[in-house]
Length: 173
Ligand SMILES: Cc1cc2nc3c(=O)[nH]c(=O)nc-3n(C[C@H](O)[C@H](O)[C@H](O)COP(=O)(O)O)c2cc1C
Image (cartoon, rainbow, N blue to C red):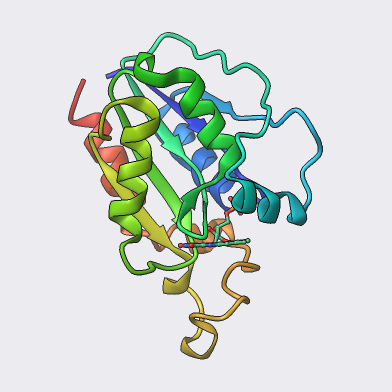
């Protein structure tokens, strides 16, 4: 398998995950880069108006599987990644979706799969959902502090999904 990681991150958690995976797999990492400066209010506006923010064109090296990595906002795939997925459309080919998000909300995984299928015309081969809530003390679970939490490289190692994803890729030479 010749995968490529395509990632978007606003505050760094998904970038950390993307870099760790690309490093271990030994594959290229392509970042989705918005055209304009992004502020926290940009997320609220994206959500309010279901925006597809302008991004720099995504140029992918040759690959046969795309590992798409992005945070979730109010159960929506982060909007700059939605722009990238819409631009790729069915040309995306086989792909998997991975997110390091806050914590699961009712219907979240199915809703994300629905968005992926709407944007690309096909479901993901795999969907790995990693949650920050696994790391934080119980009293702050379900509070806004979860969204503000920055995962450290050491904490990232505690997610078994990291090894699972790498093994899944390696099992498909
Ligand atoms: C406005 C906002 C809404 C969010 N909504 C969700 C959500 O619905 N589900 C979820 O699992 N995480 C949610 N999160 C948490 C983020 O997905 C999480 O903090 C993620 O790790 C941030 O990724 P990044 O650092 O790569 O930008 C939300 C965060 C923000 C700021």
